Image (cartoon, rainbow, N blue to C red):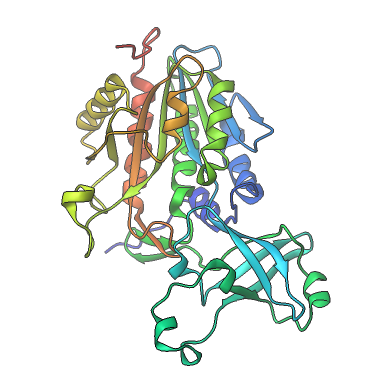
Length: 355
């Protein structure tokens, strides 16, 4: 198989440490790669990044991908220098112990390890239990509370020390594909549209949203500010092609089979139809999911913005969501970029997807 190289923009986003509310590093990457292509570029009080192409265009199309990720936040240090924390976002507690972590501090990164009582020191009943968050700690090698607090502060955040790596061909694993691939996609679409000889009729606004993992907070304010006619959220979706996943309950979606197009109450039917038409016209592989209620993505906030927004959701298949080693086929990411670029170019003046 030919050697695959991940796009620099995406690789830098995957390396950036950006738990919800602490998106500084991801913001800097988005600034670097997207700002030069935008006609206007804004940041707001929530930490969103809002890049606009063709400001006088019609309709207004908003593309949103969140740049925050799961993390841990320091809440307490005991007398021996062991650090206790709470979780940012939806963690699986089974995954937390025994991980190397990086704590972001005012004086730079501090490395540590998440610890818990060893299995040898547990009785049979304890071995069957999933530890509670307060039963896990971070060990930075400090010998006292004073020493630990000389290196970290209450409110500092940590992320797993698991870097992006290609596993085979275009399939890679990373700590936070959720949702650096979404932020990359919306930014890259704007960059590519800026390079077209003919600009789209639409005003295109690419938003890297903040704080999705704790309640789609950045998207809620961004959609009010942008006031789009049409919007598409880009996130990751569950690839259900691995063992121990019942397709009768979770549908059938596969890694490497193309972007996932969502249908359901959160999705405007005309936006879905246009996405499908673009995918077929370009021969882009695609697959489907159905969701009968507001989705667990920025789309649920965007659809309800102001007087309502014609909203779509395109997801990139991912295995092992909310673990330290999420898996994605970067070919699916590239196909998502192509699909949304074509969608933006297909819009005509006055097309607001009302139905």
